[in-house]
Amino acid sequence: MSAEPTVFKNARLILPDSVIDGSLTCDSGRIADIGGATSVAGHDCEGDYLLPGLIELHTDHLEVHYAPRPKVRWNPVSAVQAHDAQIACAGITTVFDALRVGMDEDADLRAPDMRQLADAIEQGQDENRFRADHFIHLRCEVSAPDVLEAYKFFETDSRVRLMSLMDHTPGQRQFVSLDAYKIYYQGKKGFSDAEMEAFIKDRQSRAGDIAPNNRKALAADAHARGIAIASHDDATVEHVEEAVDLGTRIAEFPTTIEAARASRQAGMSVLMGAPNVVRGGSHSGNISARELAEAGCLDVLSSDYVPVSLVQAAFQLAEEVDSISLPQAIATVTSTPARAIGLDDRGTLETDKRADMVQVRLVGNIPIVRGVWREGRRVA
Image (cartoon, rainbow, N blue to C red; front, side, top):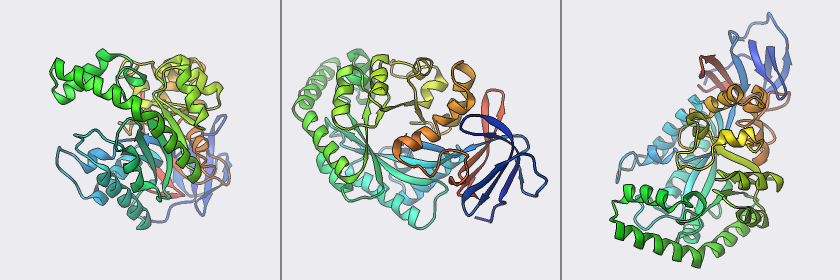
């Protein structure tokens, strides 16, 4: 990486509470000053928006680079580098790579594959291979028989900063509709109707036996290690109360307005998918992120499975929801996720914060990422 200019001028700066035309100076990787127009030589933003680097808490997009086809494995370091390039070019400067813990018996990837990807993340960080700053988010399937055994692969990994406790058992949470569950799994596994019914009964029986204890054990270890906990697909007030009892900080993808409201009232940050915003609704038929935003129950957006959706969804929220200003919309992908996960050194354009920045031009309703800087150095 070449040395970068310290002055960004002729920019529309998206500050925590306002948008101003002006300039920004960075020094030693930090924001040193925010001011008005300047004639000092530097990087000309040409009137584009300059916003904080985006912070992604839950992307499971890494796996497609490591396993691009069934039974195909790519070099894990190369896979993470490819993922990192796509993340950075979407304006994301801090990313929590979601790795699965707990698998279906016939899953193509297993716990050792997840550990290989974690090792590649560690290696890439140590060797300065990456454009973005990478952390690890463990997606723990509490209804999986192997979840605690798989967790052992990560029990000493200091880069793990977030753990989501998931339960995809049919008949509840994301799959409260058994019809939707059948459509998803019969298409995925090619089951007959009889095989599907047997599969559902097995999953429901298994979850009742092991999920509660697995959930408690993982949460206890997360607290002991200082790892933030996220709930996943909460649908009822009872789900939220369970999450509160476990010390949960983030409510990922609540499926109903009742669960979202209860989560916020309990002090949790409500996270929804940016693709949900861009598409105008949930792909699985649950509540729309826009509806939660209009109700004042949306705090954080995640790109989930489409990295570029993060910046697009933020601008779309500001355009489509009257009660949300552009600074408030940008906060859902910058300062709020930073605060939710405890990264107080980034997420806003303010003096002394990290000089993680994205230059964006809005053409029509599709934003163009024109430049990305991490700690004052251009990475995309």
